[in-house]
Amino acid sequence: MAEAFARGDPTGWIARQFIGAGTATHLPIRIDKVAGVHSGTANGGYLNWQNPEDVGILATVIAHVTTAGTGTAGVDIGAGTGSGSSDNIIDAGRIDTVNRAVNGSKDAGTNGRLFAWLSAKGGTTDYMVGKCNDLDATAVSNAYIVYIPIS
Image 1 (cartoon, one colour):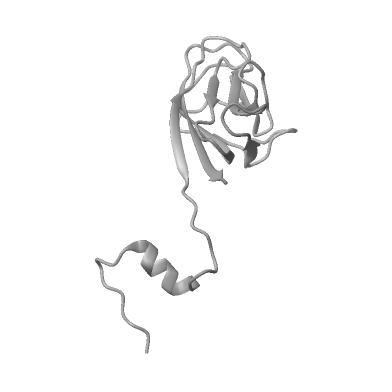
Image 2 (tube, helix red, strand yellow; image 1 turned 120 degrees about the vertical axis):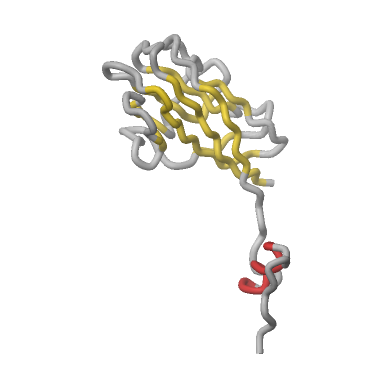
């Protein structure tokens, strides 16, 4: 008979009991919160976040709108260089509705996707960059970068 799990048991130990030893590698998921900047349409103007890891990462981003913008406010976000622009995660995601979670699943547009590869810090594509499609200083949002370091 299998041994019972106690409330105080470490979660990792419990997980290993279900999947068995040596069958999976547990990788950390990390989340960084960055305030979105809505004051201009320049490349990297909305978001300019560099991978802090010494290894490449798989990353996605969720923009959470706390104050809706007016008009056709939208953002492009993706993996790129510090001074470039990219829409390979979110392509023209609308930021005109409060409490909207803009992401690469439902706001992929033509070019977006759920995850992108970012190179290690100092590499050729080590930034998550975003720009506003339309100037809308009334919108307020935060970008949550969710990533997994891949060694």
